[in-house]
Length: 316
Image 1 (tube, rainbow, N blue to C red):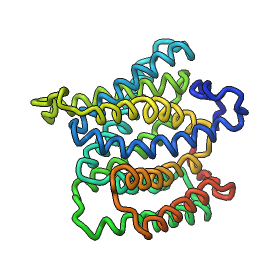
Image 2: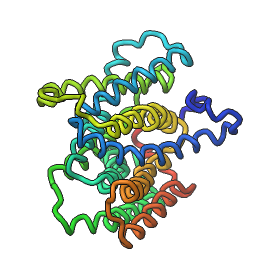
Image 3: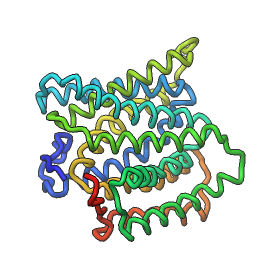
């Protein structure tokens, strides 16, 4: 795996040993992205989902772009790089976050996070189909454990009325995010992680805004009717759950094993379920707590040393 230096976003934690920076990035992904499900649920009740997501990522791209210019001083990207990075950004932000935001119109934030926890399964499935992965026994056990935890967590929700279209959109969002993440790992670019993240967010934000126009979300929308709590939630999505977290994610993908990074959807699900219960009155039962414990065990299995992924000898 290519080695890169510490993420420039790690500057606020000066004095932290460099060997701990990847794990600090992973912790940020766990906690901040876990909180994003609740924030999305709050905002989409007042702002159309694709329009909201376009605002989020265009604003985040602008902020991260300024940081990238100062820290990385990038040269003008080649057209080929722009196309490749743009495709991955569109898959992750239009397909991933756009569909997630659409789904959260009718799906509670905790359940949405649980459905997004299928990302590792999609990643492993796609890599196996491509002949690039031979999963170890520990990874197989971790994925099975994760499935069990997801089933236990989502079980109570299936007893009521579930919007299948919205739930299906979120599962499709997980698949899109997995495709975009795997494709991003294959993009060879001389640019640093902040520059790449900026371009991906910009591509995603532009495509999301285009969808918002095509679907008529802008027609009749009145921003003055949006309450302050929705604007605060959007600001949270832009900076802590946008700039900081996606910069951390881009960095973690480059310096940590893929099976370790793949644990974040499970941790996000636990955080989202607890926050949804605490702030949005989403129900948490005994089975919810058991499911959270199983999900944490799954993350531990997938991140263990014995779970290192073996590459197929016949493919790169």
